[in-house]
Amino acid sequence: MNARRKQSLTPTVTFHGAAGTVTGSMHQVEAAGKTLLLDCGLFQGRRSESYRRNARFPFQPKQIDAVILSHAHIDHCGNLPNLVKQGFRGPIYCTPATRALAAVMLGDAAKIQAEDAAYLNKKRPRGEARIEPLYDGRDVYRTLLKLHAVPYEQPRTLFPGIELTLHDAGHLLGSAIVHLRIDTPKGLRRLTYTGDLGRPGVPILRDPAPLPPADLILSESTYGGHVHEEISETADALGAIVRRTVSRGGKMIIPAFSVGRTQTIVYFLHQLIQTGNLPNIPIFVDSPMAVRATEVFQAHPECFDQETLELIVEHPDVFGEEHVTYIDKVHDSIALNRRTEPCLIVSASGMCEAGRILHHLKHNLDNPRNTILIAGYQAPDTLGRRLVEGRSEVRILGKTVPVRAEIAILNGLSAHADQPQLLAALTPLAAPTVRIRLVHGDPDRAHALAAALRPLGFCDVEVPAPGDKTAIGPSSESDSDSRKSSERESVTG
Image 1 (cartoon, one colour):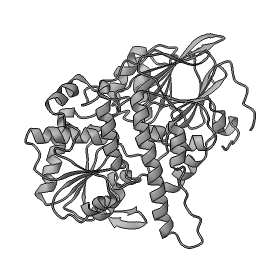
Image 2 (cartoon, rainbow, N blue to C red):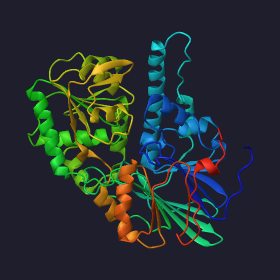
Image 3 (cartoon, rainbow, N blue to C red):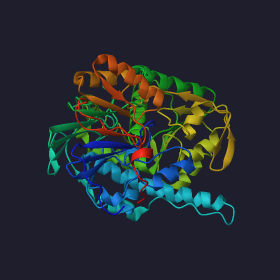
Image 4 (cartoon, rainbow, N blue to C red):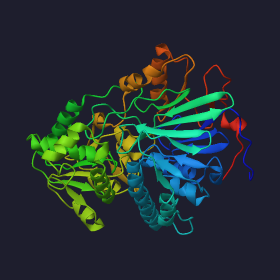
C-alpha cells in the first residue's frame, strides 16, 4: 500500500502489541491527519514466534509520523531500530532520562542479537537457513539520532492539533505517563496512556504522578487481580533466601533486567548489608549494560525520591562498587561459573530469554544447593515462566538441563502497580463517558482488573485483542472496535 489511508475525523487507537499479553508494547494512534505509535517494543516468547512477530510490522513503517516512547524497557523500545531500518523517518519523543537509557538498552540489544545469532548458527545443521539479527549497531545509531527529549510536565505541540505532555510514571528512571490533547471537528479529545505504572513507596524513584483525565485511557494491567507484599517484607524475604542458600553452600542466581530491576536489587542488598542482615558473600552484577545503566541512574537524580536523595548524601556509593563487583568482560563472566564457593550473581535478561543469564542457568540449574530467584513477571513461553511453572527440565542454548536448584519467587520487587494501586490511580477519573482499554497484561490479569473497575463507575471497560481499534472520544460516540481480520489488509514494511 503506497498511499496513506484516508484519515477518519474521529481519532482512533489500534492495538498491535501488548494486547492480551505483556510484551511487545505498540499502539497506533491516528489523529489530526497523522499516525503516531505509542511505544515500539520487542515481543518476547518462543524464539521462532518472537522473531516472526518482531520482524514484520502490521503497518508500513514509513507511514508512521512520530513515535512516543513511554520508557526504555526493551518490551517498549526494543523494536525501534527495526522500525527505522524498515523506513520510519520521523521523530521519537521521550523524557531526557529515557533517551539516555534507550541508548544503553538498544546498543546492548543489537549486541546480544548478534552474539545469540552467531552462537545458534554454529549449532545449526549444514544447509539450514542462517539466523539473522533484527538490526545492528548502525540501525541503533540512526535510531538514537531521532530521540527528542521532552521534560516532565512541559506540553509539546507535535503537529497542528496534537499536543503531548509527559508525566512521571514512577516505574523506571524516566518512565512516563503519556497524555495527548487532540483537536477534532467535534472538539477536544484526550488520550491518557499509563505506560508501565509504578508502585508508590518503592525505593529510588518518585511515586507516580496522578493520571490526567481523558476520554480514552489505555492502562497497563500486568498485576490485575494481584496484591504485592509490603516493601519491608520483600527486603526481609530477600535476606532470608540468601542466608538459606549460603547455609547449604550454594550460589544464588537472580535473573534481572539490567535497567531498573538490577539497581533496585543492588539498593536492597546495600541496605541488608548496612543493617547486618546479609552474610558476607561475594556479589556480582554480570551485565555490561547494568554498569552503563547505573551510570545513567547516577546522572539523573532529578528522578529520585527524597529518601534516596538523602541516602546518597550519607552513602554516595549506594549503586556503586563498595559491596558489588560489576562484571564487564566475557572471560570474567565465564569465570563465575567456575566458582564453587557461595556467591550471588545478578544477570540479564530478566525473563531469561537472552544474555549472560542463559549461561549461568545452564551451569547452575542442575545443582540442588543453588537457588534461582525469580524477582519479576515472567511472560508466557519464556524460560523464566517455565522455571516458575516448575518444569523438571528446560532447554537452554540447545541443551536440555535438569532443574534441581531451588526456584524461589519474590514478586515484591516488581516495579508495576498491583490491583489496589491501579484502582487507586484510575478511580478519580471514573465517569460514565470514559473508555478504558486494558493492555500489557495476561488475559486473566486484565479481566480481573476490568471486573474491579466496572462497579467503580467505568461503564466502558474492555480488554482489546491485537488489531482491535477504539475511538478516542466519550463512550457516547460511536466506537469503532473491530478485529484486524475483518478490517485491516495485510501490510509489510
